Amino acid sequence: MASEPAAVGSSEQSQSLGSVDDPIPMQTKRVSEQLAWLAVALATAASALAQEPRQWLERMNQALTSRNYDGVFSHWQDGRVEMLRIVHRNLNGQVTERLASLDGSGREFIRTGTELTCYLPDKRTVLVETQSGEAGSLLASFPTFDEKSAGFYDIQELLRTRINRRDTRVIAVTPRDEFRYGYRLWIDETTAMPLKTQLCDSHGRIIEQVVFASLTVANHIPIRHSGLKWRLTASSGCATIPLRSRPACRIPRRCGARSNFRPAFA
Image (tube, rainbow, N blue to C red; front, side, top):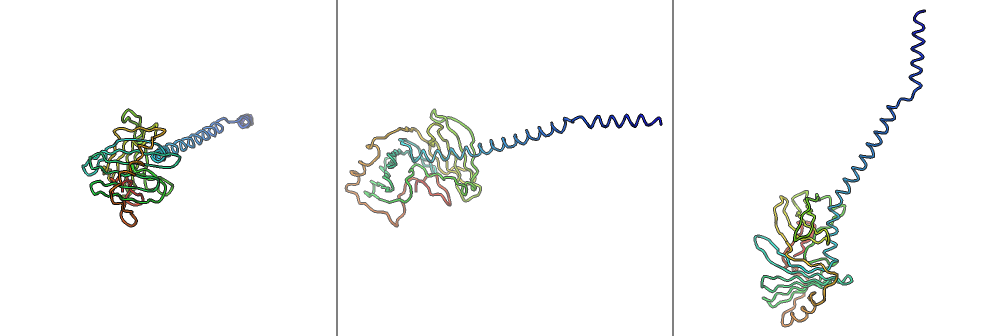
């Protein structure tokens, strides 16, 4: 009989404990929800960071084709350096472009829309080629990354630095196999123009390099700089050869790829 009060007391204590809400499960649930939201936020931020370098490449490609610019750059390949000047003019979607060698050879390459004219004064020859597709830029033809092609490359931003007193983003495009070229691109933060570009092999060795010594981006470039008037007079006395089945004009080769991307300078 002496044990009954103890039993009753234990029963009451048990009932009393069971009637009070335990805060521990609620706290655990809140922590789990917070961790879940944090994981989603981190995943979103990581996705945004991964997309940003690709967006810079898209902006650069757009700038090369749509902006008006006049620049002098050095082109390095196989130990040889050549200085060239490029004038790119876009008036209401009509592209006119002039690429001139400054090494004394007098070579000039002029494009009006889809027509490319190569002036070779040493041979007194003008080669004319009609190109297919949209007008891009003689300066460079970098790959555009869609869902299919992006799977062949790792794209990342390496650092931020300054070139010619301009803030730039350094973007690395590294192939995932040995069949494609890689790129390192110094992209101007203000204009999205590539101030320096390197074409690399699958081991990261530099094959070609372009560095701008001067670059002016303008809202409008007068037609006298576009090469239209020059082409009408300079071709006088030269043999004009339409290019149909023959190879493309030999412009200094620039950043391209080994398989599915065409070099800008054929």
